[in-house]
Image 1: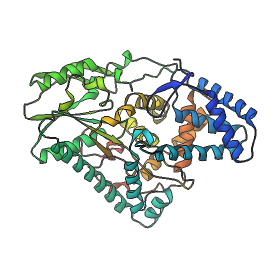
Image 2: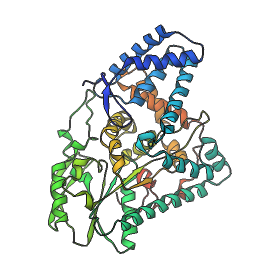
Image 3: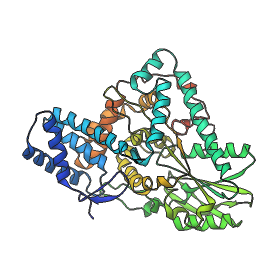
Image 4: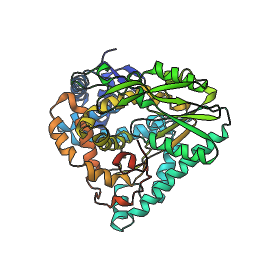
Length: 444
């Protein structure tokens, strides 16, 4: 089915787009505030459909993308009260989904109980809201917040390593998977440290070196390369090397240079001893074809996500994908020589691939790690806030860049009240956050 005719649901399924559902939702929101009738709702739904088709001519929008456009169209047409009612309606629908008998999923297929645990931890430490973090900064307790966040994450890594040990000697491949900028690389290193201290011999394989040359990837109408799909990696070669390594054979893995976008074959010699466990961090580690040559009984699947529960004064929560975007905007600027605005405009590829190739497989994981640290946000704001007004001006009237425009506008409005001046030297050099802002003890 063509872009514009389909949408991606929250579970990753691609389904036909139904404009009547938009009209009904707008109509209900309008009726709740004594607004316009169904005829105007139908007209607005048509505008939404046209805007979506223009903005997502080359890719399939998500449900969230579509709902963001509904809000934008309502505001542009002067229906401010209805827009507010629609936002509340979205929130209520989310609560209804998680409250159904037997429901086990919330945002991005993560169990609701796990999200509640994160919110409870934040509340116990006074950092569940922008106002709470501001109070912590004003009272000079930011270093204590950093320490608490580091301790929580370290405890989760220890729990993950313990779970691996409980699985016994049958585990030969540990897969650390998760969406972009969730902290897979640092978590992989931490797991290696933990397991090594328990007498386990670990050897890591860098899947990033298996990217095809960038020029082999398809381009969109902007000339952007889509390297977020599993097919951007040489899956056949990955499986060939995994099978050979687990059989005790020596392989020569490739080397990929992100600055040039070029891969060189047969560079890094590698062998896995019989008593060693292979550790692999991979964006698409849950994608079945990625490790099809390894029996499931030999795998341990760990999933990592920024399960942040930070709200603003309108009771809106920072989206996990927006949090990870901020991390990646910084990291790409120094590690991959990408302008932060290039990362912003590329993000629709990231989200599309997550929903299609990562989210649907979360139910198969053996352990879940939360990498979100509330202490990150003041630093993220300080380093990136000045980019968003420029992005809003650049993309406001560019219908093909509406994803970037809406995301920039949402992030800027969310972070605007947050204090951004903190002393980041209190963030340890071993911190996961250093993977993104630099200054880490670890080599990435």
